[in-house]
Amino acid sequence: MKSEGLCVGGGACTGGGFDQHAMRASVEGVLTDGKAGGFALTRFWANMEWALEEHLGVHDLVEYETRLNHIFPTYDDVVGCTYDLTRVSACVVIDILLTQW
Image (cartoon, rainbow, N blue to C red):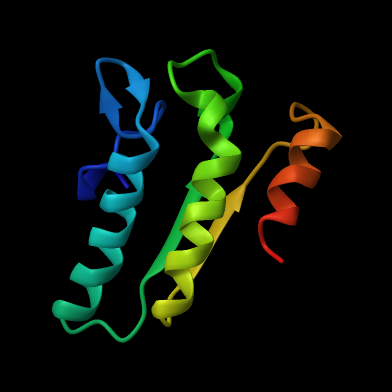
C-alpha cells in the first residue's frame, strides 16, 4: 500500500487523520491502475490495526467500509481487510461484517 501512495498507519493522511473519502479514492485508484497496467488481478490486503489508534476520522471506519462495498463489485479483484480479534471488540467486528451483506 505504501508503494502506491496509501499511508499505512492512519489511512489517507491529511493532517495526520483518516479521510475516508480520500482513502476510498486511493483504493479505487489502485484497482483501476492495476487493470490499466495490464494486470488481470489485483490483490489488495489491508491490515486495520491503525483503526485501533485515536486518529482523527477513525470513527468513520464502518461508513468507509460500507462505501467500499459499493465499489468492489465493479472490479474482479481480491480485497481483504484483517482485524486483530484480540484487540477489536465484537460489536465493531459485527458492524463491519454487516456491511458485507
